[in-house]
Length: 177
Length: 240
Image (cartoon, rainbow over all chains, first blue to last red; front, top):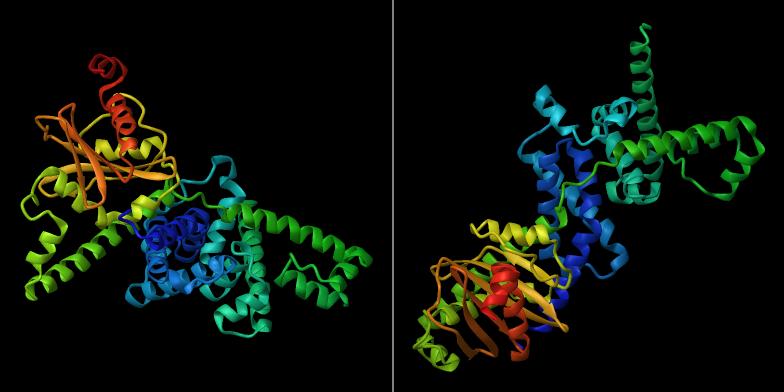
């Protein structure tokens, strides 16, 4: 047989990794950068780096955290080169980015999504790790290199800011000051 | 835990489940109401963040990795060959492989293509029919009938000067590689054994199908299936 067994095992492991985590990584990337195409690029870069460093992954349970870490670094690297942001998107682009939403969910969900994208990264990032990744405060703290108490404050304020933004929008919609 | 500490924890981590946290919630009606509102907000937040990934994201990621891997292997092979040549070893290597006088034939090029995408032989997950059809459409070929269900890899590869669709199927736990050459029709059927692979070369439609496997018994079934898929049931029945 011309193929060495380790090649198959490694490729199989990678394929399983991609199938299990690419959707979740995409969601995380999307909310980090706010753009669908950029999110897909980030996932691709993340997975290519994961492929190159697959030997570093010793336990299947660690795969998710490992991939999140790579993605966060890729995102940071991206920001070192350029600073893409929602302010670079024109209205048409922005509408296309949000076109995935079910029209019935456009109302309040759309407001919440916009509020989420408007959150400063220091609040948005830990919240994404908690809500999308299921990280505990201690795990987020370890990942971000800050104290657990600081993470708790960030998470508290992130939710407060989202609720405030929704409340403001609701008041505006109803003609209140 | 008092109300202040409960609210602080609730605001930061609504999914918190420590015993003292739960005990306070159950004992304090005002905090229980706050907890219920927080859970409602979390559900709404989770719904809002549930962006659907693009269609076939995993397949596209695997294709990107496959392409990068193939290029990396090609570079590695080129470096190895350059080293062998500089050491005067290319001639010896050619003799060892028994391919010195037959390096440009379709079967030789097909076999030589395999190490560059060796990982594809290990893929076990069948890929969607649409991806297979797209692989052929990329080469300007439309399938006449459904492809075999056990295809695990498709890529529009150049093989030497030929434009091809490279496929891998899993049959009885073993990979069968099929390379369909577009626009080049071999004059006759041909069978070969080369570098550990058994193969068959079959003119099919306006092109040529090369099937390769470690077990020669797997070849006829693979050729039959692809004849059916490329020619359609009526034509393949006529040919049979």
